[in-house]
Image 1 (tube, rainbow, N blue to C red):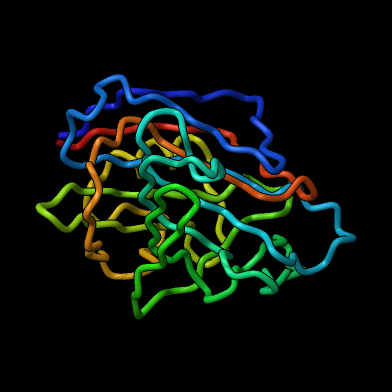
Image 2: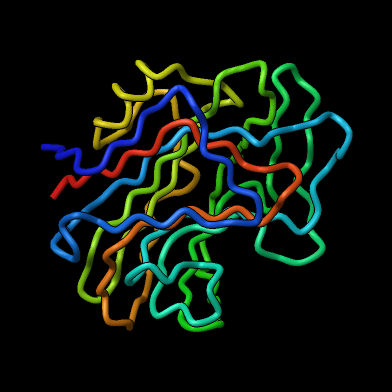
Length: 223
């Protein structure tokens, strides 16, 4: 059963420009499986072409010390575009969208200034919608606690498709095989040796141009 514990749905959009959204989980560390669900679009101007050195990171962290902070205590999630010098390829569409390097979002952990990439295979193509004439794309991150391994799975909109709010709300509450999104990889087992005191969600975008516009953010506790 899904418990929607934090819900921000608005006709406006939060803009992240080399910034990070951090939310404290109202239940603290008392969870077994959570989903971070949001809709977003990169504000494409049509002139920048492919993106260089761009990073999208979505995860859970200890306290309000997130991915971009060099003093991160503990962070676990997925990162798209983490390698310097790599390109997010722009597809002209319509709709316009970006495809990150490695085609997907790769599971990472971060403690202090050290980010560790977790090897995974079979990644499907991730897409970041970038056409403001269309609806935002959906993104879901599922994190399940383990002993010691955590399980991480990330979903994005299928085939650069968009979703209205009604479709988003229906899909986000479906724990297994949510509709309208594609699992980017099989559930990744993360060999994790930290404290596990994850009490906040984190969404980070490294670019000011284009900024990342977030339409809706929902935190769901499945267990």
